[in-house]
Image (cartoon, rainbow, N blue to C red; front, side):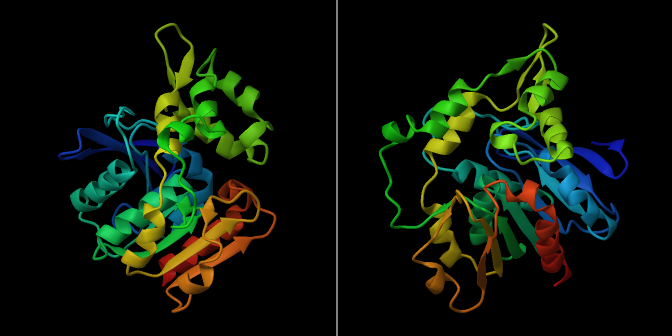
Length: 294
């Protein structure tokens, strides 16, 4: 199914055999060429959040932005009970690469989406040409791993569970979020795009979060060191742009070893926070453009 929503933005629902449902996605760029780039979003967000960031690439490249399980418009089961890792998200991305028969593709993502892209590339090196990751959630093997019960009480997990879920309208959400909290450094276009698919209509006329607080919290509590180990298991070139302040790419002490042979590049973007794709879209697009042109 494909529907033109606005110039160059195409809506897709992609059935993933064996995964329990459909993954929602948006396409940008020429439909008559192979998919060049698959982009995965951060925890709690959705594919459309990155529309204004990625749209300029559509002049030359075909871009697929996906809604991961439990986010946006995807119709995949999202039960947080018993989860212990992000392997379900990585397996969804692997299923997408297989069902679309993608090879030689660039995988990219922000935060959790960056880690999931890294995990998938390590499992399917024959399908991935390169990785471009923006402040991916990567914890080195010497990062202390608290018990799950303690992680469930972390500020991030508690914040996700306690986040206001219902608003009178999407316009009210934009007004409430503009210039505040995590959205303080966001441009208006990215905020509006996030809210467009980040909230869904309720029968009473109000809107509520598409990503349930319990699911978002489960992603915070199941992050582990698998992403760090995937650096070594992967085979393709990897470029990492991480935040200067509050980075979730916690590889200090290992950068020299990771980058020794030149396959992996790790750079810090001056002045940036974890939301560097929203703060420095110019740098993000340049990095993606370079990978796509190689």
